[in-house]
Length: 255
Image (cartoon, rainbow, N blue to C red; front, side, top):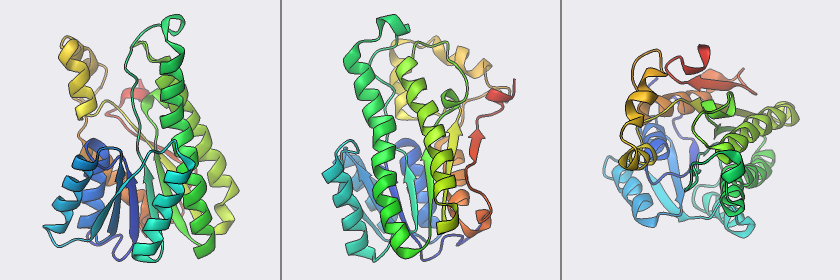
């Protein structure tokens, strides 16, 4: 797949760590110029450095994906720097600070998770699509989750609702812009070994084995395995793929 996005301009939100960083590095390896966007400036700049020290091109943009003006500025900076936007990975998201049954979920937690995970994806898509309509082409991949396809046993009603929303948003947008040369897909990762998971396991280490046994392949996934799927979906090799929710989950939802 060497050079499969050669010369393209790619935007990755949540690019400071985890799946976002792995995707940015894979885009760069395959020849894309990068915009790394995140609230975490230190992590985002580290991702940029990892790309540029290997001869790639990348810039960092500080963004709050729940802010219209910040998202609009992010797209403007992308176009100002590189002249266009070919690929977007809308990956920024949170799990929520509290795991609890639905009736115990605080309203502020619900609002925060939905704002970042769903409104944030919608806002990013809105301004990405405006630019892609102007160009006449583009590819978008949203990070959903297996929890956007099935229910959960882990007290994450807000997270599940947000990710189900991302799946629906992806499918609807794919139909609305199919004839405009814009493809919209989603990846639905299983449990991936990221800082988010590591943090959760600090307080509940017994969860690791519970999580692993739910994946038929017998392990959690790696960020790089999601990154490969995202970059393929953005490449011309996937030119007939739109409206698709690609599960990269070690067989989790096949059970």
